[in-house]
Length: 249
Image (cartoon, rainbow, N blue to C red; front, side):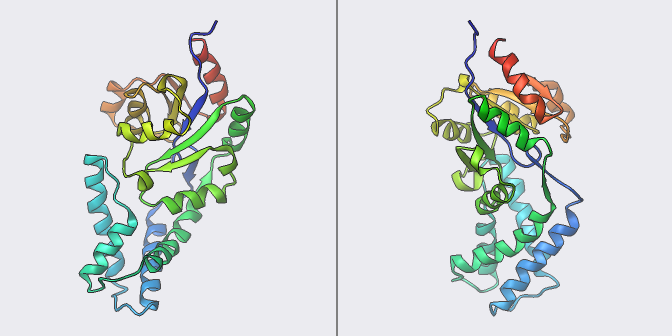
């Protein structure tokens, strides 16, 4: 009899199921300009030469903080706060959403689904596994749009983002919320991702098996020394066989 009974697989999204084709800097610059142009078109007196960089600087400041406290700061929150400082206190949620949609319409063009993602997802579902996504992301809508764009939503029971639940990996709460979708104990689940700390350590600390996908990873030296994944892969297509081995480990 196998010692383990694994029935659920949690995936990271960016860097695991999808990757950035090209350097991000020009896409981000164009995206921030698109957001600013939309807001200007709504009658806001913003400086196209300075507002995009101010917005990005403010995002970076909040993003540094979220890495410390593991509490997500959303793009919507940052944009609303910056516009308040510019004298626009009552910007409605629809305007903020449309502005961000203009931004993400640019950045989404640089994301590409991994070639072995769809075949792997299909194989896992055929093998009876339940699948979910846990993504550290500052905008839930962006993640959901990308999943629909890639045609992968049908394989997942849920797509949980830090923007939606407030907690970022490796905070234990985001893993607990994910497992609650299945009423699944941690010992029956695995997490696969490219980040040793957020994905592997975070999962292991709540009792989930942690699998490291290392083909696009660039881990810190100290993480390589202190974090030992339960398995390491260079291809997603190796995941079904790896799960078979973990079942009888």
